[in-house]
Structure formats: structure tokens, C-alpha cells
Length: 360
Image 1 (cartoon, rainbow, N blue to C red):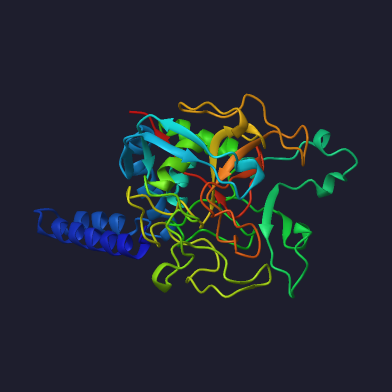
Image 2: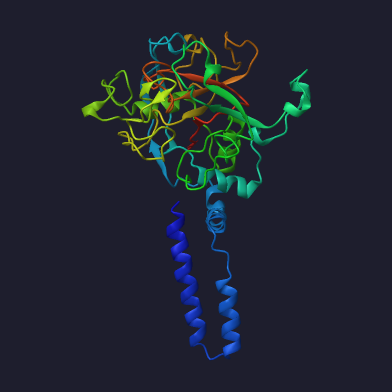
């Protein structure tokens, strides 16, 4: 959303209204009072943004297919042999569906929060029962934030660059001093699976199955290493927002972005969909199981009935797809076609978002 644009429009409208009052056959006192009331209207960035959000909230809640792309469905080879949890490659068919042409933005999520008063998981108080032995003063709502180390480090300990930051949430994705003001067109982050599901239900949509997500990303193209083709940089240009440089301490931002990019910053795929690779990870509806592909249904698979991750037994996880601006050819190369990610159901971080789908 261009706040400056809407601010200018508001000023023009207010000026016009005051002029119109001056042309009416009213007393000078009445004209002055009316103009004074109008010119005192709140034209701050926050007021104008909230006004726009409220105006669009009703439309968003109806499940409109605005800014969605119709996918006719079809058959494709799902998965990749590059990763143990993404094989075997298997033939899958999906029915037709609508899919968001871009990731859900901060402005769209703000409309949902304004309309429903929803509070994300990262903003909610922590239950001491879930953290036995932890001092109460340390139980502060927050979320995971990528904080690059000052120098090169071994890549065997993610706690060297991931930190729990109190008061980090969707409105303050990197911590309390950060803000989404001016980033209304960026993908919303710091949303858990439960948050994403709540938004989708409000919007009259749902989260995609990972089969639907991959079908949309492949866009009926021949199987290649990347969704966009065989080369990491086709024609010498970056096709997605990923990490360049020495991970995790030196992001050269050669693609133009050190963090998340506004939606539609990179080329759309043949189906007309943006940012299915890189930028931010995207939640899928499927529970995650490392060996699901060995027994997956071939027709509209919806994931296993039980989550299973041998790395964290007993922790419920859902599938994430597409990689993010933190994926590089040195670490987490999950923008590779067919690859999978995973995340605990209630967890969020500052490179994780989502998009929605809608049945016909």
C-alpha cells in the first residue's frame, strides 16, 4: 500500500470538500465550522492505513478470488531424490483449485486482525506449565529471529544465528524495535501454522496441500533442478530471493534483498504465480512425516494422519515449502524443486509466511 499516495488523495478530498462548503448558501460561521471539522480529520499514516484495511476487510472475508490464479489441475511427478524425506519421486494428480498469486502480505493479515481481533501465537502469554523450571520473568512472548553472527562459523549449530527474541511477532518481525510500517506489501512473517490456518478460514480459503503447492510451483514444466529451470541464475539473473555470499554471516544481497522482498519482486511462473521459490517459507496443510512419500496416495494426497519427525519424536509438525531468503547453496538448499521443509505447529520465525488456496 502506498501510504503517501493515499495521504495525498485524502488532502485533495478534504480541500475539495472545504471549497464546496464555501459555495453553499450558508453563513460564514457554519462554513468555518464545517471546514474546521473536516480539516481536523486524522490523516496520519496509521489512521489512513486502518481506514483502508477496514474498508477492505468485508471483501477479504467473503472468500473472493481476487488476486488468485485458477489451476486446472493435472498429473505430475512429485518429490526429488536429492533429499531422503522427498523420495521416492511418485506420480500424483490434483483437482482444480484457486491459489493466491503471491504470499499473504502484511496489509492482508492486518485486515484479518482488525476484523477479528485475532492474537497470534507469538503474542500470547506463555504458560508456565509448558516451561517447567524456567523463571517466570523469562516467560515473555516472542519468537525466533535470524541474527547473523559477526564472523564465519561452522554450520552445525543453528543457535549461532537463530535467537528467541522477546516481543518479536508479525508486527515487529525482528523484535520490538522493528516495524512493518512501510512494508505493507511484504509477505507477513512470524506466523505459526495455527495463525495461517485461522487467516485462511476467515478469508473463506484454506492452506494448500503440499501436492497442490508443488503442482503450482512446477507449472507443468519439464523436471529440472530448480522450479524455474536448470540454471541457478538463468541468463545471469537471480530468479528468486535467496541468500548470496557466505552463510550465515555475510549476505551480499546480490539479488537486491537481504531480507524478505515485497511480493511480485521476481518474475512470475507460467501459471502467473509469484515467489513460490525463496522469499519466505510457506505453510502447507499437511502434517509432516519423513517417510510419507513411500505410502502417499496418488490422487489428491492430503498428508499423513500422524506427524513423524525422527529428529524430534512426539513433536507435531506441518510441511513448509519453497525455501526463503536465508536458503543458499551452502546451507538449506530447499529452493530445489521437490524439496520439503517442516515446522512445529505453534512455532514461527521471521522468514516464514504462507499463501492460501480455494476450492472451485
